[in-house]
Structures are given as structure tokens and as C-alpha cells.
Amino acid sequence: MQFMDFFRANAIDPSWVKLYTSRGTESYHHKLFMRYTVLFVDLLIFYPAVLFYHYFSKAKHRHVTKQSILLLILFYPGLILIDYGHFQYNCVSLGLFIWSVIAFEHEYDIAGSITFSMALNYKQMELYHALPIFCFLLGKAWQQSWSKW
Image (tube, rainbow, N blue to C red; front, side):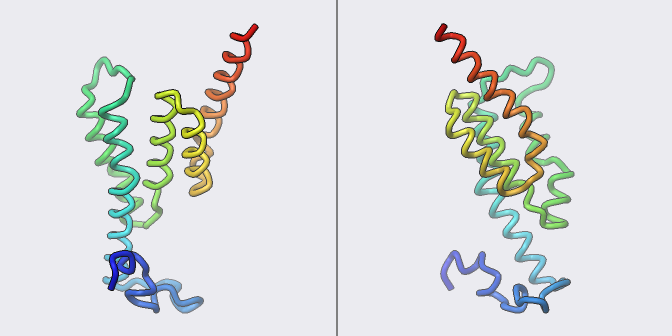
């Protein structure tokens, strides 16, 4: 079995993804597989984004140390319960959103727009962040257009 076959449910047990008959499958191995896929995606997208933001952020926090903020984000019980309990994979869209914030903070507006679009296309939950991102980019465009005058 190749490495990527481990993350394909069909290669492990085809009954997990069989059309019409796999609905409501709740075996121990299936839950374990899904929890491992959440952990894999966390390690691939969410944790690096949070760590990168933590170490390279330009934001200044007055009353709370950056280490406590990092611990609160990484071990937030709501995200852990939803992602590992109900397999919602919110960490993917949140990780992509954090990558977009990092890109915007470091003046990479196109990369930030692309990663935010990826987050929005992955999960519509990112519509909560769409209005602030839109206003930020619109304000930046207005500043650039007015500076030419």
C-alpha cells in the first residue's frame, strides 16, 4: 500500500464509500480513519498557518502574551470537538483564512486573495470573513487610486 492510499478510504475499506449503502456507517475503524484524516489536514494546513502567524506576525498584543494566544488557538476545544467529533474539517478553511491574513499583512494581496478564495470555496462558513476582507481590499484600492492624484 502506498502512502497516499492510506488516506483514500476506498483503498482501506470500499464499504465506507459505497454509494447508497455507506450512509450511517459507524465502525470503529472508520471513525479512526476519519480522525486521522482530520489530524493530517490539521498538521498540513492549520497548525503551520497558526505557527507562522505566531512567529511572523506584525501585530502587537499588549495584555496577553503571544504564547498564550498560540495555545488558545491550537487547543481551542470548540474546534477540536467539531472537527474530531463530527468530522467537519473546519481547520482547512480556517487555516487557509489564516494564510490569507498572513499574506495581506505582508503586502501579498494577490496571494491573500487566492488563499481566501480557496477557503471560501472549501467551506461557505468563510462568508463570515468575506465582508471584512472585501472592505480591506476596497480600502486599499481606494488608497492606491487616491495616491496617484
